[in-house]
Amino acid sequence: MKKLALLLTMLVALASTSLCFAADGNDLNKQQKTVDKFIAALDENPAPEYAVIAPLLNAKFAQKLDEKAYQAFQKSAKQQLGTLKEAKFRLFERYADGSRVVYVGNFAKEKVVLMQFVFDLKNTLLAVNLNAVKEQGAAQNQAQK
Image 1: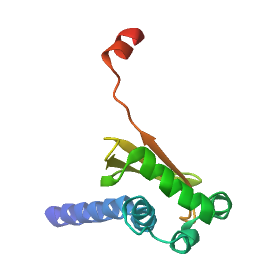
Image 2: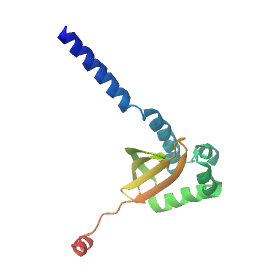
Image 3: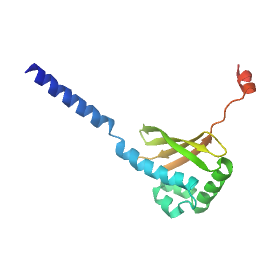
Image 4: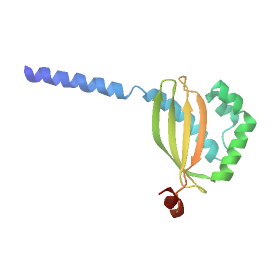
């Protein structure tokens, strides 16, 4: 009888923890689909039209990133970073007012680029940030010491 009670207790504990871990799974899936479309804008030829991207944007971000700004963003990214070789998911962070999804990209001109996508609570895109990570040279390391 004790073994049966222990077994049931363990099953309930394991089931409840697995549910807790999957709480953000649905939001992450939606956000990753949005990110995939935005990454396709950097990678694919032809890139997705603005009409595909626009419904995924937060209203304030959509005002800043209109069709002309979207095309300028694509052109600038391709000039500065080159073509995208690989993009890997790295991080999902939940905040009180939204979340952040981070990918690490490998481009033709830059080996490591952090691609950060910020979402609100409605899973609409608030901001996009692409940062090339540069390796410090020996002279910079010496100067910091």
